[in-house]
Length: 561
Image 1 (spheres, one colour):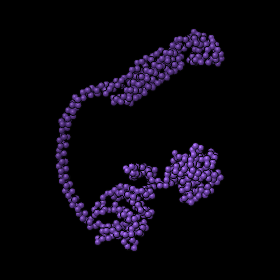
Image 2 (spheres, helix red, strand yellow; image 1 turned 135 degrees about the vertical axis):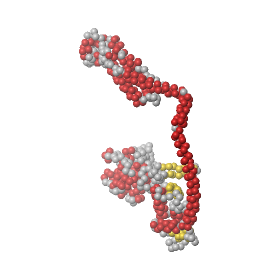
Image 3 (spheres, helix red, strand yellow; image 1 turned 45 degrees about the vertical axis):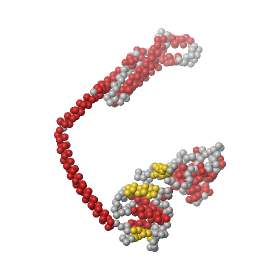
Image 4 (cartoon, helix red, strand yellow; image 1 turned 180 degrees about the vertical axis):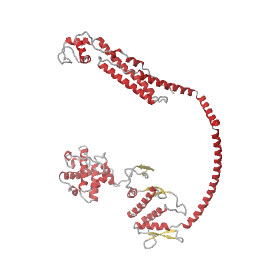
């Protein structure tokens, strides 16, 4: 370990004893104005004021009258060379004290921050802070002396504070020297320590060693006996499993599966077909219509997919063999709704959600489920979870699989990445960094989809809900939206600014409120303050759509697909 550098405060301590600090530095006493200055005690004030005197005849810095040449000469004579020498000495002491004390504190900080294990950090910290406080106080004393030379000052003594730090560093260096001596003779010290340890273990702890050997011998014998018993039990277990397999063959039947599938179809009101048993021992399945006729040759592609799914749905709860029913399993559903109509898709979605719940709650043999699909509607049905907030729940993950240049790439998402076009449009409205160019088309598509397509309410009916100035604003909004969505934008002349966008966003919100659809607006906006309310008196004048920025439909990057 390197030794620590000590500190030397002799130069700083010497400056504490400078006679000029305790001296009243004033001007020459034999000048006739000296008595007045001494009686008033304003020597420092007069000296400072002389710096603003421009010569005889100029304005006096003290009374603002013409400065008499004789008075100026006496004032300059009052502050003679001895005075100026004392002033210079004070300035030198101030500079030297600052430099030397800085070196002193850096030396103390170096020892404090050295990281040496032999320095008591807490004690050292308090000592260094005490020294730093004293130095700062003395610097303020000296600065005051420089500004007011006639004021005697006495500096705070640093001797004891410096001595404490030096003693602490010397104590640490003594411990470091002892450590380094040990390191220099490391080989001999290690050999001696090893010899002492073995002597302790063998000679002084002989009873413990003997006890250990005795207990180990007994345990070895016990292990040998247990191993023999385990071997015998393993043979018994193998024989019992053979008997179990034979018994399962006698009781295994597909009838429970047939009954369960038919009950499932009946519970959902599905009557196109049902299952029955077949074969000499009723070990096979048969698909029949509601009138009992065989449906094997008349099944549509969708029905074939559906019955295949139902078989798989029950297979994951059983087994294709007489044994293995109770094994844990991982299930993969790979696009199970291909060629299915909407009713069957709903049944499949409901059944899969049952399995998801069982897997999450740990109530069955299914421990993990992989769901792959191209069908967005099916994905929304299966993935819907009212307990999910902004991010995925701990038991689920979302992935998007893409093939790029012949290589399959999996992208992980913290939230459900599947959104409808309508949701994406509202997401753009909520986005505080929305584009001023595309927001026109976004608002048009929302109003058109919600009020015109779904609500069968045209824009004139919506505008009629407003009165007075608000009706003009609403009419302007529809005009602006339609115009901005179907024409080319020309940013060389005019563009929608933040104030204009905010104004129309407020009117967009009021359209939902006056038509009693505020709940829909609140649901889609998510309770967030998507727009800032503007005072109608501060809003810009409502102008024709020809003065606003225009936008082509292709500028907006979200499509129905």
